[in-house]
Image (cartoon, rainbow, N blue to C red; front, side):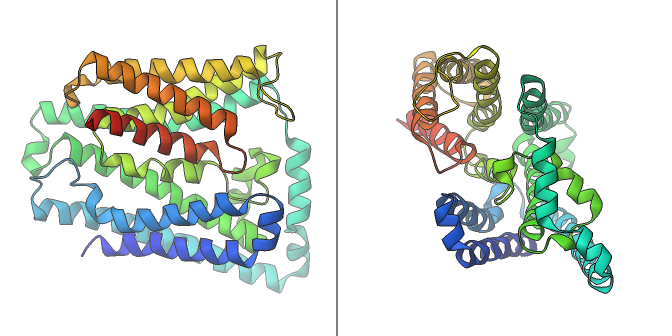
Length: 343
């Protein structure tokens, strides 16, 4: 039952997100955000239900004692994180309500104006934003490599762990800890902005103007990777790189060299569109071959997985309008690869 605190945290987030979306449904429907935010609430629900099965998903012989210990560590970290956040939000609420000047300074409309005035939509700024998204993938690959090294040295055996259970524990704990941190801040920002401490407000200064009245893109991106914890590692790595790397390549090439509009009333270009598809194909082809030890599959099947992923990426890029591609890209390309693998 050591998994229960973490599961309850994410189920609680799901409920709070649903309440926020339903409460503001008229505005969300008018701004085409309703479906996107409902999906985010569902992703939190899925995370809560799936958490008890994540660490042992690819480690079927993981002893219960080791599993309980991993659950305990993760839940302890998250409970400390939540406690710090609650204390911080309550403190800021008290000092804001006691001092009208502080409350006036913490007006969200003024903050939105500040964000819009700071926004720079050029290649250099976009590169910095995309690099932060890529950092998610770097973490996944680094922790997997660390787990592989420790497993080969026989160190993990001393704790009855293997590469999958140890690496997934690190990846999941860091990833979900990130989500907990940003969703608290997002819910406070969108509902009671005066509750946010100044250091948290600085996080959001670089967000896109279109994110000012919704959740930042990073949260659903991480949540959308959760189902692929249950897939072989090469699929998880490919999905993460497609979501961050292929998307970044499409955006940056389109911004730098794009001259032909993909479709009417769209800021996407044909050059960026093609780059995204080619990048997706190459990512799957390369990652599957690098980590082929962890997946029993022929080159022909890898080739079809790469083709299928590229086609799905292009379909999302062309047709997705009101649902974030940070949700659709990982889910569709990931399940597409997984289905081809199982055929």
